[in-house]
Length: 258
Image 1 (tube, rainbow, N blue to C red):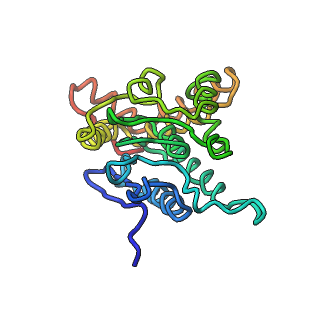
Image 2 (spheres, rainbow, N blue to C red):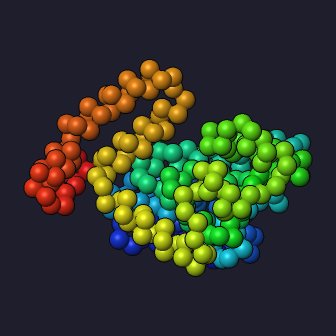
Image 3 (tube, helix red, strand yellow):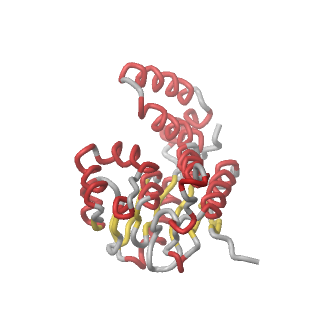
């Protein structure tokens, strides 16, 4: 029986998903994409899971992008792998729980896309980030929208046209990552951070994260009206009442996700 290409480990309400093809620099095969989508869906539906950490196996890469050896030749029709990328990126956006990246090495092409799906990112000092697709006659279509939203047009085109990767320090300066640490500290630090942010109300985290993604393409007035409605729902929730009571009573709140 072949080993799973995405492993799952659950501890203290935090699920760690590990891209598990270290011999291939964790390149995204169709099987890996399918397993990742299933693992994300499972984490989303499990009330015991409060946050998810995404990382890569081994020390060669976080994720080198799509497995080019699995690409279907153009004459054979549309590559179903492209649809799997859409499924995975959409599952990340709809997770409803904090998603943190523990980037232990290069994150390239589709691997960079996974990094951009994460709400918070901790990167190794040796990590690099880039979109090298143009070198093999391709373009980073599947990650382009996310890269432009995060970086703006000029920095995005710098990555697309030069195929050059940037280092972890520059990635932090550009706003791609939140923290940069020695490689051995990345996964433990990310898990601790996941545990910290998952202590808040599950309802608040889900509604806030969903709203964050929903307003991405909205005009300002439309976004403000949506946020007003979502705030009204949260303000009437049991967790909001508990939070206010805990503040008054100077104690830690006991959130129930309602």
